[in-house]
Length: 392
Image (cartoon, rainbow, N blue to C red; front, side):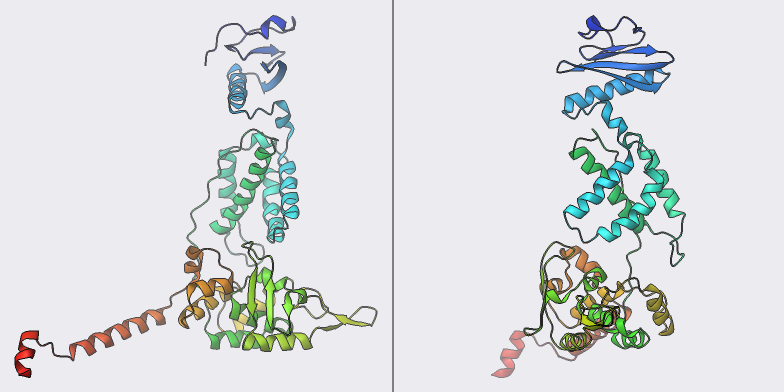
């Protein structure tokens, strides 16, 4: 890449342009309008002029080289990409979630609540790695809205993943030519929370009636709260006592037989399906679990936290029931493949993270090992030759 020599553009240039800067041979050159440096280049016979927005020729040359690189990669967008703002990218991201019916769409709104104020008004091409690093630092210094606890790296990573997806869509759709590198934070907050059956029932006893079976279902199946919340009677075959979840978070359908206590939950939910409408008439709830008026169960953190506090388990999350379900299945000898089909874990690595080993599990394992060792020590080992001689 050279910065001297003539180009085909120069023969056609406007006489009002002053060629005062370096050039890229065979591609373009810099010129000055007023106090600002501009670039001019040609691609497949089409002439482009762009302002660098800077009084420094080095900034303009950097822009020209960037356009030259984009042409080489077949990714040239041209001046139009500078008019694309981050709000445009976020709107395209929301559209993508809606078109693909992503179950995590509600979570996207929470992520954009923080991303939009930080980046929304900026041009997409102005987002640099440095700006993203500062966003990380800012978010980690903040506290959560509900529990007022420090924002965790995992939370920031989910937001960064949404930001990365927004850029990926924009590059794929050729709205911008390149995306900044977005690196995620190291996560050291893998939770170890779980609850024993006796403790769990203590929590359930203090929950509102509409949440009791909701929580029991989560504890027995290990389903995600979003999956339990969105479960409808259309997914339930009452006669066969089977639930079919066609679209779970891992994009795979899931079949769940309602056996034992789950069958009892089915019967109670069936009896509680009738609701009273605002006009005084009665109807049937669409949702398997509802808040009493047929509506799906919404945010229940306050009653959940209160029940956990009263049961002596402050800080326990509803998501910890998922970990507890995995642990209970593992303790009961349920194979990993079967357990993963029930809980909806797609990969073994994630499932293993949820398969929590408690102090009591470790103690029990050591006690069993030591008992086996003592039993072996009680047997006297006799050499084969000596045993044969004694038997004659």
